[in-house]
Length: 105
Image 1 (cartoon, helix red, strand yellow):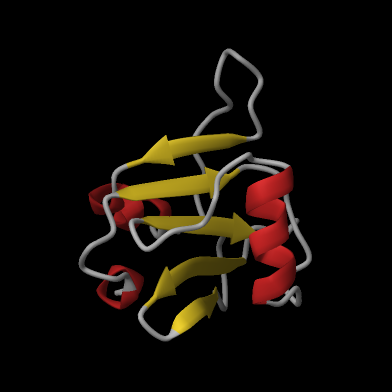
Image 2 (cartoon, rainbow, N blue to C red):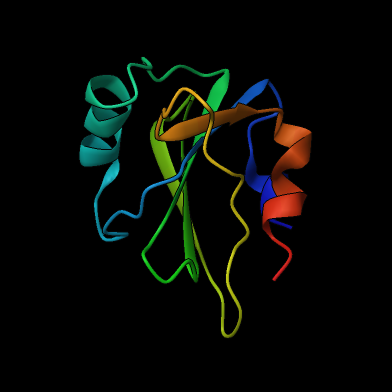
């Protein structure tokens, strides 16, 4: 049901494959997007991050109110992440419709 919180105008989902500290705020997540992934956050892109145990997912995106974060914590199980690219990039670009596939535990 997390996909219901994505902005309707989002057409790209960027999944960061390395674990992060899920207590980071929007400012630090935005810096990670710009400096590590080389993506300038905009209103058409949502970023997905997970912690080391993969039981907490953070969505980061921009909307008309500014920077937004949404956190989903699992009671049991873990989030499924895509495999690394052949080019070794620490992220994968997906369509927003593929988000429910990550939420199966």
